[in-house]
Structures are given as structure tokens and as C-alpha cells.
Image (cartoon, rainbow, N blue to C red; front, side, top):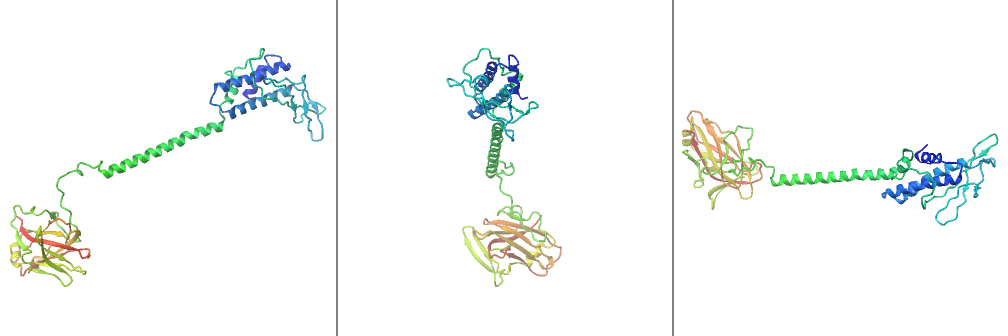
Length: 378
């Protein structure tokens, strides 16, 4: 038994349920309780209120059918004829100033004794209470027996489920929006250097660019340095100067040309498509001063304007050996590119050479050589 039926039956038990007028008052009291519950809950829609009233009307119809006399079966299919209830057979229902509506009842066949009998269900109109009826039992909306009535006026489960879905969807949208904003903020922060460390923000002069080594060994202190950095406490021996380019050899597909600009004189070298290098002579007298010593060579150079390049350096010092292959990334600013050689203690039998390829990638880029010099480590 559901809560609506239980509440109505409890009210009927408080009086004479066989009295049609008493039953009518109970039914009106039930509708009045529903009406008060609807008014106390302004969030209930008109459609839901109508649905709740129809539910009570159906339950009253079912209860009222128990007080109607049974009628004999008619027809082989067990169909009962429609019965029109007169003034003495069903409670009168009054809505405003309207005349009472006769109840037309139609229902299934149901056996009541040895002779087949059928019980009919009355049509109970939607009763709207106009005022509190005297003598009607009170139906307490807060009582456990009538709790179902109060529950029925709440929005139905589908409506609650739809409203319940709105919150998760809104939360998901806000979460995605927040994460997107945080991601964009982090991206711009990284681009603007907000997360750079103190070491990255150091404004000290830049370190010398690293050398690009081939398979041969390059000493750890090799690399470019600003002109003049290597001058301190060194006695330099000149190996090449643009003022005397007679000791420079360029193969047929390479070029070597003395030029001058506001930085001074220099020799612009450009290796050929074959990757051939330009050779700079190292006199035998210079090698004799380096025999048995630890020497540091210094190439002062830059790349052609607007075209950074990689140069490679090879040496041939005859009996004194070589320097291994060196590679340097040369920029547009004039810099010093150093490498050291430890010479054996023997007398050289001839002069040597330093060969420079202006473009290791063989793209025809040029390098400007300002000077080549050497000094002995103290």
C-alpha cells in the first residue's frame, strides 16, 4: 500500500466509511492537503502539480470502487456495461458553481460469488477544495502515513536527474577553462623568461663558443676568444699577416684575396666545391723555436658578413708531427680561435703548413683571416 492510499484509508477509519458524504469530505481533505503542499513548494511546475492531482484522483477512484455495488457480467468477453451513478450511489463532487458531474464507470470483470459479478470503477473528477469542510478528518502532511503525499509533490525523478546533470557539466567546463588558462600562462611565462635561473640571467660576458670536434682530439682550452684576450704574458711569433700573403697557397677551385675595411686588413679565403683548404706556411725557423715545447696557436678570424660558417684546421709540421683536425663555429664578430700542440724535442727538417677550410659543409662560405700566430707556454 503506497503512502497516498494509506493516508486516505487512515482518515476513512476515523469515521463512517460507508457514509458517502463522509467519504467525500475525506477525499476533499486529501486534495486540500495536496494543495497546501503545492503552495508551500513554489518550485513545483504546473505540469508536475497536475500529475500529482491525477495520482490522488486515481487512488480515490480505486478506493471508492470498493464501496460500489457489484454488477452482473454481460457478454462472452466479460465486458461490463457503463454504469451511470445517480445521486444515491456515489458522492457528489462540487467544483465552484458547477453542477455535479455524474460518474460513468467502466471496469474489468471480477468474480464476487458463485454467480459472476463485476466491480466497476467510478470516474472521480479532479476535486479542488474551496474551503475547509466541517467534519472532515485532518490529513497531516507531516505524518508518516501521509509522507508519500508530500513526496509526490516534489519534482519527478527525471527532472531531478536533469537538474543534477547540470552541475557536473558546469564543473567540467570551468575546470577545462581553468586548466587552459593556466597552460597559456605557463607558456607565456616560459617565453618571457620568468622561470630562468640566476645562472641563465647572468649578464657577464658570454663564454667562448665551443669548438666542433671531428674524430681527432681537441684540447679543453681550445676555442675562440676575443682579440687581445690571449695577449697577456705571451711572446707571440707571427706565422701569417695580410701584409705578406706570399706564403699562402690556394688550390685552383679555392680563392684567397687580401681585403680591408674599418676592422683592418684581412685575407678572405673561400674553399672550393671539392672542400680543398688554403695553406699557410709555418717557417722552419719558427718550428725550431717550438721543438720540445708546449705551444699555443692563435687564429684571429671572422665569417663573411651575414654568413656564419664552420672552419676546419689541419696541420703538417713534418718531423714534429701535426695538430689533429680542429673545427670551429665562426661568427660575424672577430674572434680568436686557439689550439695547443706539444712538440717533440727534435730538430725539424723542413717548414710546415697550417691548412684552413673556410666551409666544412662545402657551401662556398668564406672566412676572413686577420692573423695566425704562436707562442710558447712558460
